[in-house]
Amino acid sequence: MTPAWDALIGAFERAVGGAPVDASAFEPLVSAAISDGTVDSELDPHRTARLLAALATGTHGIGPDDSDVATALMVATRWMHPPRLGARRESGPAV
Image (cartoon, rainbow, N blue to C red):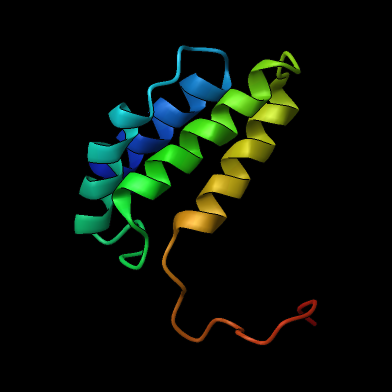
């Protein structure tokens, strides 16, 4: 996507994989990705960094395998990206 997005997702993936987690390290990465438009501008960088750190830390106790890492990345990616133009906004399953 962009260098800011790649740096953020790379740091998150390493954290999910068991690297030490420091929420303050995510904050500038989130801010940079918000600035370039790859992370939704409605998200607060500080709170987003804290929640990414919590999600990553939550995988440490389960000894994440590749599927766990992929799932965590999908959750984070879908949560942080801004809504797409023309995206379906009603609740419920897409048809």
